Image 1 (cartoon, rainbow, N blue to C red):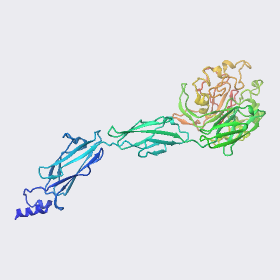
Image 2: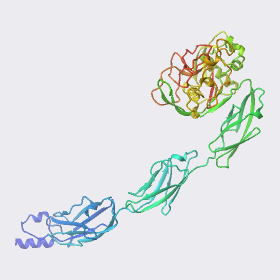
Image 3: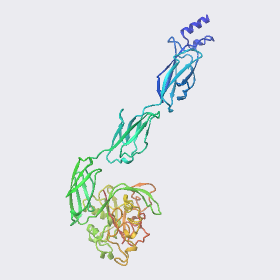
Image 4: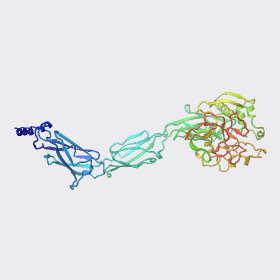
Length: 559
């Protein structure tokens, strides 16, 4: 009866508990093998499913060992292409279905037909030899191409890519983000020069299949027809882009027809001046603006040049500390130092009378000196008011001397972006002295020979008197920017309190927040060649109330 019962159990199926009834050697159930798919590529999984054949309720009545193999068309073992492949697996006792998964590796391989086989000495396996096609990924598509915030999806069937980037983009060194088919690679890598089309080759994982894509990057043409800067004969125009007007302050009696224009329109735009009209045409060739130029005569107007911002190593060339300084704003700089006559025109003859008595015979064009730091910033504010600009400084708590010049005051900057006249920071001063972005690396501002560019002890003595003296501006050679007398003649006040340089790269450094002495730069007519006249040399610091025969003013303005 026990054997009969066992036979019935085998016929109707069994479970784990049933198998514990007797220790009788019974035949295992038959199995069937199936593959989830007959074609797979690298990264996909080979899924082998074994199931009990026969009655739907039947389960395995014992552990069933199965031996697997994968062979190529020549009968050679091809199991190396499947990660973690094991030749022996076990169909577990009591289960109806058993699944085994192997991932196809990403090793480079040819496309090939293999046979997956399963045998068991314990039972029969139907469908135990199945054909399977394996290969690397053969897709070699470019899916998307991106530069900055601009991205284009690449459509199937096309091998040309066109990307539009914002106005002003420099095409010579752009690094794109390229998305290609899974496991594919592309060349060239890294930054590219897109001033002409670039050919990209996308190669599939199989190392054979590839496609070439022609990528063209175009800069969007600007519609901006505005003016950024207009200088006529050195006189800086005050531009109102909202109303398309330019006011140019010029000295009384100036023949405006003879003034040479220096114009910077918006990026990519062009311009044409005819009479008192400047027509700006945008890069797109469609949008235009007509600017009306008007001239206003003033008692004094400084001649200036534009200095574009940049980065340099401040102090480089000397023996002291250096640091990387960035001047972020473009600015205008007076090409010569303020003269005695100009100072008097703005602040009055009484205040101008502070100019040293022995220098006055030289005439009103001699560089102004004997001014305090407070006089310098006050001069800037008054000149701004004269020219219809916003004063750059707030000056309060003034203490006046008998001649009206200032011996003390509280000075703060109203708006660092303001358009009024001001004195330069020490970093701006050195950047200008070096020639800005046009620097040729001279020791002195514009030359390696001090007497070519500056009045110093060697060439200033006895020219006007036995003691030496400052000179009118612009008599010697200018530096790379067209700026004169940035060494020798008179020292020039800078905005900064004197202190140590910062130890890290700094943008628009302005010196310590407070101090006892203000910075001067450039040396003076009594300086020796090896003194403070080199572009990297820091001048002597002086208390802001100091009034010396050798300290003067040079003004700048934000663009």
